[in-house]
Image (cartoon, rainbow, N blue to C red; front, side, top):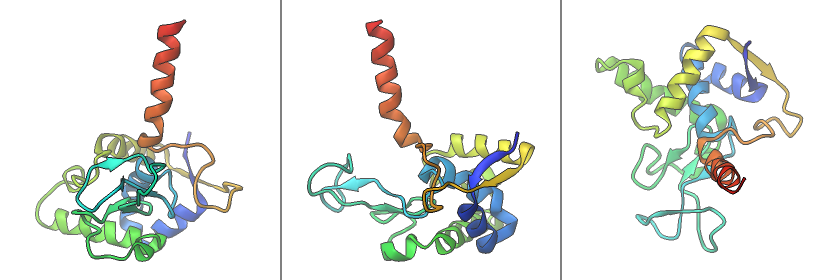
Length: 167
């Protein structure tokens, strides 16, 4: 069964770098839920620890499909509004990946900056095996209506664990 991915993300990845489309979409799944406008890794101060984004006074430091990190990561020096441009975000990721591959790294090793690399690789392999089905999200085209980011699953899994212990 093909992997369902929002049409907008598929179109943006195709435009950014068709040759790396599947890898780019595999990064965007776990990192942003295929949402070009995703913001995360919130902090109270530059160089500080990451806090929940609902924390008063916090601000995001990661942006876009691939969650480029602007506080010591691949997104340093790039304005957030640029990183929130879907095609540009994917182009930047593709440039990094192509540079790493040119230096002799495998595709898997080129994904080192993304903390969700194991989930990204599993999704990449699934996309390679099953293909992609572009879907309309019905919510403006940015992301699937359910959270698919690994960060979004943490509280859900915590509640599930509590429910299992209580019952």
